[in-house]
Amino acid sequence: MKYFIAFLLGLTIPLAISLSDLDWLESLANIATVIAVLAVIVAYVDHRNRVEQEDVRVTLQQLRFFRTEIMNRYSKMLTEMQAKDSKFVFPRVGYIEEFTYGWLYDQRREICLKQGNLEEDQNLNKSSTNLLNEMEEFSWQVILYKTIDSRALYAVHEVFVQLVEEFAHNMLLRRIQSEDYYSAIKTIYDSWAPLVERRTVQELVDAAVHSYKNSKKSSARVPD
Image 1 (tube, rainbow, N blue to C red):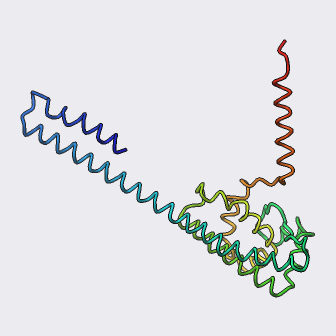
Image 2 (cartoon, rainbow, N blue to C red; image 1 turned 135 degrees about the horizontal axis):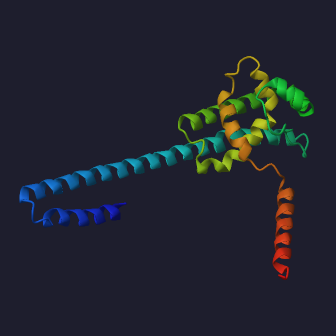
Image 3 (cartoon, one colour; image 1 turned 60 degrees about the horizontal axis):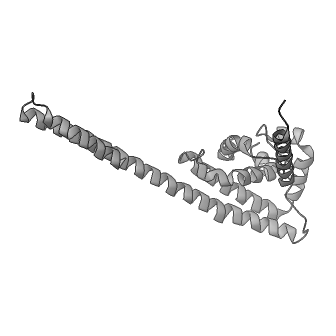
């Protein structure tokens, strides 16, 4: 941008002072106008750069909060459960089409009941509630600072969606009392969940191999 401004200045000032039919006062006025316009452009560019820098700073803070608060708590919960069963994973309900407990119980009953049984452990119930509260705080930060579409947050889309689906029973059970509970989580989930790749790693590998083999077959065909 600064090179563009210099180029513009180089074009306009000579033009302003080279017009022989204008007296020197009018030429001076033209120069002043050009300088004023350039000052506005410079101020705009400076403002835009400051806004972009602030956006980056805010997004980094959100990522740091997600990693240090949310992921640390989740890792601790998972470690405690795997100390009892090394193969333990939190049951996941899959894509939540409707953010109500009624939908969860009707459409994902088996997983819903599994999650509910786990929450009979008071320590786990307390930990999952604290986790959801931290996710709600993170979600409000994303909403209020308007970073929901930030590319820098792509890295946490999948994990965020996973956590919502693993603790859906606790979250949606509380929303029976009021839809205000975890409303920010719902907003972020509705935006990010459709973007998440839900195939397993093996399924992704198989699809890539299949695509590669098909491309090789196509390139090996002899044209008629």
